[in-house]
Image (tube, rainbow, N blue to C red):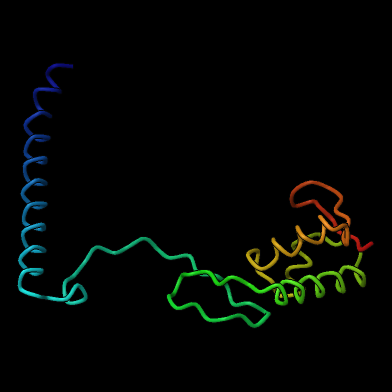
Length: 138
């Protein structure tokens, strides 16, 4: 095992040294750009993590000021979605959540809160577990 360690140690040390040098150059370049008054947009930057965006709502909602920022839905918006869900379930009792969401064109983000409110208020009866849950209207 010490033979492998002896061969790997110089490779790892060189890698760490190169990495430190690259990091220092990057920091110095950023500092020089800041001092020179360059804008952040003018400098290349590392790609950021993907932003999860809220899906388009079937109910009208206010536009977010920034992309990727979720918009708080009003009580009226939630009630409209709830009413659509109840109407559909009354006409189609025993359907699973996936089927209801697909039929109404709702995303999971738009579906979860109104559904939990309906079940909590006992406007809908849920039977089953997880994806096998079926819904009927009271």
